[in-house]
Length: 362
Image (cartoon, rainbow, N blue to C red; front, side, top):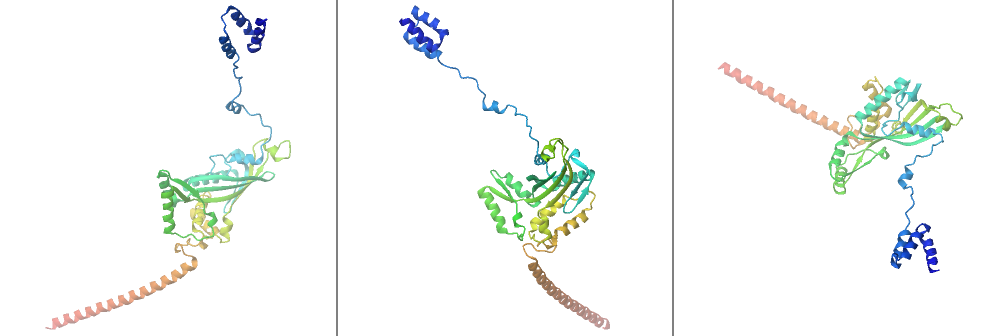
């Protein structure tokens, strides 16, 4: 009976497949009480069941998405990571009579559109240093219409050396910011500000660089491929969208037209950007005159040829009047001095002639 109870106990602990061998060993005396405990602990250990790790779970192929691509997603796909301007550069995505309109220039036709866009891309890469293009917002405003807000940033030519110096300094952090909120403030050069810039850079290891930035808004009108539904979301998935019309506007242009921009630095940045938008085969001089007249740059303090840095138009006019008076007085003194010197010179010549006549008489 004791052997039967032990057999049942072992069967419950290690299973029937090991009961026979263990029971026979026990009967033969090869299994002691201590070895029996070790035997139970050995055979009752369980091996963990196989499971999927987080890496293997995430590496599984996702299910096929049946939801149609929206117009916003299609527009965002146009601006890839290497895009530097809000233009469509694929032939198959342009209509034959595609039209582009901006504040200063307009063009119609696929060929002229691509020619202009490629030229502007080349000029931007040549003229604008450390160019960064970013799409801020994309929204669908109607059937086949998308509104895109974007910004273009670069380092002004006058600050490129400072940025290079900051990057060569060990542990220096370059912090870029724009000055668009100061468009109505007169830019003034200050040695104190320059000193504070370098002091902060040396002691705080932070170099704050005021970069140039242009914010624009572009409205795209697309031809949506025909689908099974009138919804633009479902029709966009049927094929590629085709651009028919593009209208671009810069946020600073209305401020320039109303003569609210007083910052010379922002004015120069805007002129530099518009220089890169020169149409093909357009004379540079005519394009510069158009930019100057459109922006009314002459109304911005410091943009005229004789403007003095840091002074308003009234102060500059007063300085011109003072300088004119000073120049007039100096001119009068020079004329009086010159006349006096000439009179003395002729008197000396007359005296020498008289001495010569007296010598000849003797």
